[in-house]
Image 1: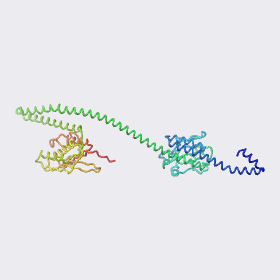
Image 2: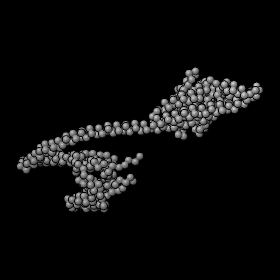
Image 3: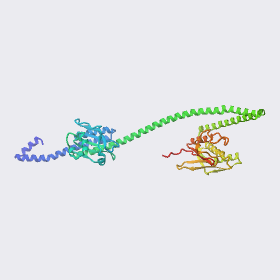
Image 4: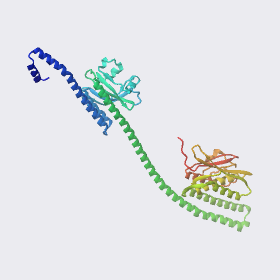
Length: 474
């Protein structure tokens, strides 16, 4: 109450004692009003600080700036000596951490980057803070704290502290710490409630930061994936250019083989035949045998050239995938084989309804090679069986097969079956150049499928192939 007001009241009171009683009465009534006004002012300041903290969450501000700005405002508002954000180390069991942000009175040392180890926090207190526990200590030396806890506080010159959890969702990320270092301090309920609200908003900021980090990682991964894809595409384009160049060279080589090599071979074969026909009587049997061998060798080389050209064309021809009636193709091939050796007793079995999505011309080449193989390697059987069919894999892939009960092969050498010019049987037993199965493999690979074989010596063989890329089980 000011002096002017007291003078007016004094003029109304004749008795000095009555005046003193009136003054005391008025003072008693005014004092609670002053306290209410002070609390209302403090609450208004707290709300303004809280509103600013909320507003910062809507701005593109990094977590470090939010922490630093909030620490400054809270320390000024509460008139505290230090306000800091403490973070637990990941995978430390909440026993280790450090202060990552603070605002501190210059009269006291900084707590930043000082590693803190509290071996009992994780086991005894972390679960309670994760559920929202608040610690308000007016005097660390008279609060019944454990020696290890008090020693940790003392190294930061703390006399009183207020600690609330910083939660990232449901995970205890760290602690918001208010320190009074100059003297003990009794924390008011309004202050504790205010710090709780600030901690809640910082928890929202932590969640936003986590989401932003995850988003940035996803963006970086996507950018890296795009860069890898661009590099892959560039490599693919380069590979296509190189492949085109190789194909041109291969075409030139094929032309050279087809024309430049065939002519001398035909000359050798033709002149050898002429010598045999015109001068054969002048040669002894050994000379005649040599000429016949020369002719056989040149004819074999000519066949090798034809097979190589066929293999080359398989990898270069355009593919036209359509629905193909396998039964019709296989039946036609089997009929032709039977006509070449009508004396043979061979039972052909074709599974009904065999259809595939493939290039019809290339698939015919596959069936011709596999059925010719089966026909050839059953030639020593009095009665032979050749079967064409399918089976369904567990992943839904259709597997086609050609099976025979002929000579078979040793599985130990199965890796040689599909290599050009690799043979498991002598040419005098079963003629051939070892190109057929290599051709089959290349055609199957062009369709995205795979080919393999199973056999037992003397009991036959089965060749399997697919025509689509199969899903890899993970």
